[in-house]
Length: 217
Image (tube, rainbow, N blue to C red):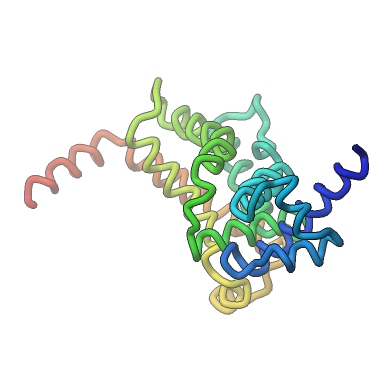
């Protein structure tokens, strides 16, 4: 039994590296097994097929990341948003196991497989619920509504700049290296920019002007 668990784990770890490097379509079961020191039959035995292995790899990769960002439960929601953004930015830039997940995510982003949507929704739910609740409290709302969801999308997609732009291109745009200090400055900017936007859309005058502008359409 212990040997079987060891083989299964080796396949998972090898598959994570290969899928992260080549994406789902570019990866082969043969290459994964070569990296794992296992035979192809072992993949069929433990996972069934390549698609099932891919879904298992996603769950495994996600388990290597913090379940939710480290946020002080006693802090005001504005400070919690800053902490959430900083943790997310740092996770996206991590090397090692967490970095594998970031690359895996990027490969799926570039070439969607349609294989992981149900499991992704389940895996991402705790983090998403946390961010939605933080924004809801900043807005002073008693429930999550469309305005909260739109704000959540804005915040998280600013953080995804580290996934959608190559590091070398981002360094060119910034004019400096992506070291920890710069990443923290970026996180601070995203948080403050987001807080400003969240406060703006909550102002009655802003909402009224938006309704007025729609009337000109």
